[in-house]
Image (cartoon, rainbow, N blue to C red; front, side, top):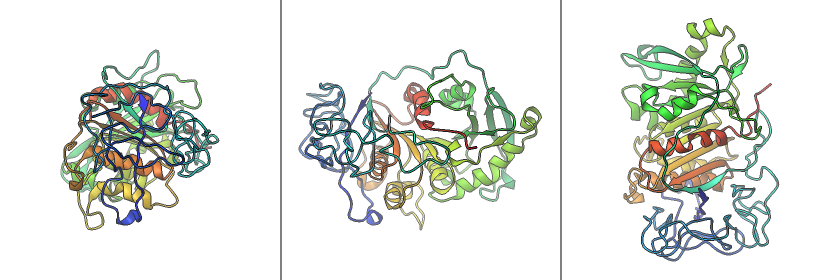
Length: 432
């Protein structure tokens, strides 16, 4: 895995913006201070001082052409190469980024180079933070930023010598819903870890598309059933309760619509039933889910990602995981005529930034990757826009660009999900 630079042009008005953040023609980003927008033809976006392996030359990998779509690696420079070890920053060190490991800090922060380089020193710990986290200390910026990963992606979530979680399930009667009334039922599946102490407030993660989790999301179920021991306090994943929630018959309507409806459904209708479930209460009379936003997470893949993002944006979930997020225009409304494509503009317009910690992944050959960005249906550009907006506003974010991968690529998830959970839960301290 290596860090890949991203250049973009700031908009005069975020609210008026409807196109991609990433512009230019794929050259190198060089110079002092803030990285410049890419220019030139075909090369990789690199800063002076060498790259960690981003391809360069004609047709190099991860070059952002007009409209922000990446080119396919080809011809000279199509394989990772380069020397210098760490992604170097421009001389002078000011601008977006900061912290060990190429973290993303607030734009213009003193010393905020992508990594230490000639004249550039990392900012103090926490340079990329949006403020003191509600439940503890700032986790710092290690692991934040933009990364390109390369195949092969063979691998599974690694768990050894750990206790298994207990599975519970009940049927939600759709006719009782005030948010999404319908016929039939949907199964709600809960995994409670053996480490849970009855009477304490449990941190938890909502898993969208929670249908038949054992077959639909094997890498996530592996994580739900097993919690590996991690003694590093900066990366420790707490014993999480996993709540799998499937969509109703109108999946896209529930997931892709930008509104507070899905968050009201989860917080007002699903979570109370989880907390009061008779089978869970029989085993844990004092069972309760935390109300601390920093102990609440949401996961989504494809359309499940804007649903997860909505839980962070419209409700009290501070940790978001998105694979191949459908941040494109699928569900257009009067309030949001470009649907989830508008999230980057919403992020740019939000002051102060929300206390969110967001993981994003997209495959090189994800849905619509050959589609003109002006159509607002290119998943690659949509996710690049998300990452660039989060970077500009100083959020804790981590963006993986998976070379050779497709939409919701299971091998990519299996290879990265354990590390993703580590990063997403960095800095978590249970609320007193």
